Amino acid sequence: MTVSLIDSHAHLIDGRFKHDLHQVLDRAKEAGLKAIINVGYDLSTSKKAVTMSLSHDILYTAVGAHPHDAANLPADYLETLQQLAKKPKVLAIGETGLDYYRNLSPKAAQQKVFREHLQLATLLSLPVIIHDRDAHEDVMKILGEQAKGTLRGVMHCFSGDVDLARRCLDLGFYISIAGPVTFKQQGMLAEVARFVPLDRLLVETDCPYLTPQPFRGKRNEPSYVYYVVEQVATLRGIDVESVASVITGNAEVLFGID
Ligand SMILES: [Zn+2]
Ligand SMILES: [Zn+2]
Image (cartoon, rainbow, N blue to C red; front, side, top):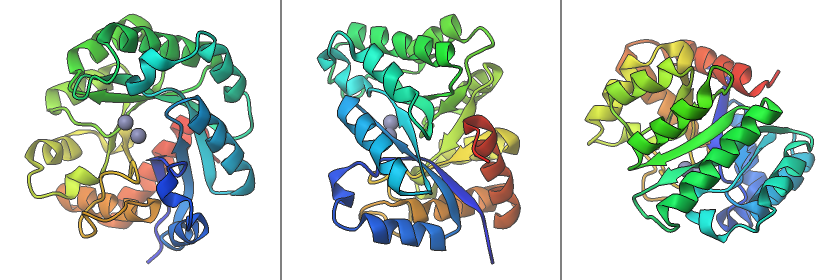
């Protein structure tokens, strides 16, 4: 069985991949991955992701600052991001968004930086990767102000209900499903995975976090995105190969991978 997969959200810049990145990437290729979006979460990891992509065919990059760091960014961070975004293999701006679960930066700072990321994505005509944790209403409000038909992107590690998914789809966004869809208590997410039109779905690992079953509790890695696709296929009652080929095509379209 050959499936072609794309992990639309991984953090291979994380220190947990320092010692065995080559093996992790080999396993990803064996599992059928043709691309991995390696997502920066501050200036230094964004830079590192750009550098990593130059020595590994399979790696592409997103540059951005996570809402956790919104209050700690240098005044000229946007210029730095803009420079980085012009480097080879940078396909998206992110991750960016709002995180009211941990609130590591004040809400006002998170919102300002989120708006600035959306403006940068619009300016550069790049898709945006959005992180929304316990901040659905403010994320939708800010997206509504900024979207105006030209902004494209994905709600990564989607954690809302069907109604929120519908609102994101109405704005033209893709919905990305991560490992939690394989957990036992996944009623709402299972509903979303069945509801979203197949041509608007993406999958991701968000590794090293959110490891899917059957590896829950271990470090996550891009090859495990297969288990997310398998669960989506089971929930929708279609075969894995068909789901994989549509979802992979979606990621290619959104990020411009050929
Ligand atoms: Zn995130
Ligand atoms: Zn992430």
